Length: 478
Image (spheres, rainbow, N blue to C red):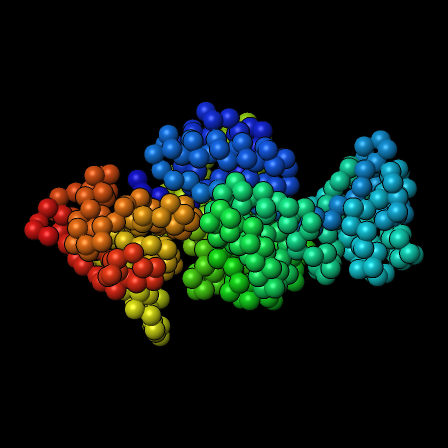
């Protein structure tokens, strides 16, 4: 069956062999995520090579995402590897401490004392440990443990409510962008952006680093800071897509606030013609178990019903015991959820005006296919913009985007309800349309007697030139 919602799978120790990667792609992975918080440049380069080869064997293009580490603010190391904090006890975070003990620990972000004042609340290890800031003395942050527990090396620190000044792009991120461009990734995910400027800077760096390779990657903003919420529209405008990164976001704004924020972010992304990924702990129990919890099934299904383009696996596919089964299970949940989705296309078009010809054709194709009960929409596209616009609205009619550009084919791998296919388009419009129809029929997506809606631009080969809509019935004179 045609699955509209895409799956992003992180690869790591459990999934870095060519054999497992091929199985993951065959199971339904559409985008592979390289997590630059772990591994060396050579690790990522080798994994990317394995992904490209596995995709070739599977017979379809799979996109690669480089996910930058960003300014993850962490405690330092302990002389014994960890300590146990007890509620009510004092504990010091010391920017000048080399090796931690039961009384204090160092910081990898030396400017943290500057950002804090008495009364602030710090959340460590994804919020499992809570510290109240009592006073700040030079490099030392004196706290009282509010919620205790084991604290080990390099655990993350967040401030409740956000407000830390660490820049979105670190020196490591800048070097990782250069590595990612040399690998030829399709997407770059930027961690902890606060505003549009952070994304604009990241795009500029990626475009410069990608220029020698002829690459301009799509830029994804990971929404995980409290400050990013009021700046969301600006961040969307400066990005190609966003990720609802529910882990750090939940620590900063509180767990209870995240579900409503997720729905709001997905809605705003679609209204802004941007794609959106929902991430973090979606199938967490499958790191160790062969089946998910019922709550996880509901979580994935609700993200689909919210309209997300993609759902993401992190440790489940990178380090879990069942990477292939997890993808198969997630794909089945997505398919089932999509069956119950109601199209609101007519309502979507109310009070909408389209000033561009190509966008008007895209919307006309959607409307026509939906009301005529077409089997498929086939879009000949150079850049993929036509397919993106169509994919912002749900119709139950699958969209097949045919392009001569491999880069566009991979970029469209993340768009909801879009299947991207390669077609070396002819300069003759009718020949190209006939070839497109034959490709879709040849792959079994349509058969004799089916109605298909086609869109194309003339003259051929120009990005943004879609200006023609054609309705055909397969097998009848063209």
